[in-house]
Image (cartoon, rainbow, N blue to C red):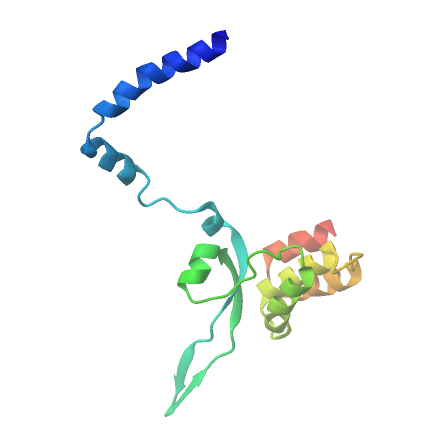
Length: 151
């Protein structure tokens, strides 16, 4: 009963105060949230960027798409694509990174190693992880050197 009375009393105090709020106060409250960013935009994702339009002599061509790790907002701004809600599926991440790794990209090779170390749909494959870490480490990738050392 006492808590019920407290609620009624707090409402009796708050309602006149709300009635005194001007439209200017309400406008200031809405500008306080202006420019806020959604938390999901700040997540780091495996982004597949579109290819670059290149010119060589008189020919114009589109380069292959390239993977990168960036925020979801940056990926969207740059015209890339990423898997928004299926991050538990390592095979989708492997498909994104494998082509760049096979072409010799050290960051992609390290990422492929990390995917194999974590386990692709089951048990981790440490041998495959070591092979990819070594390829990236041979190119001077410091993260791959650390991963290889801890593996």
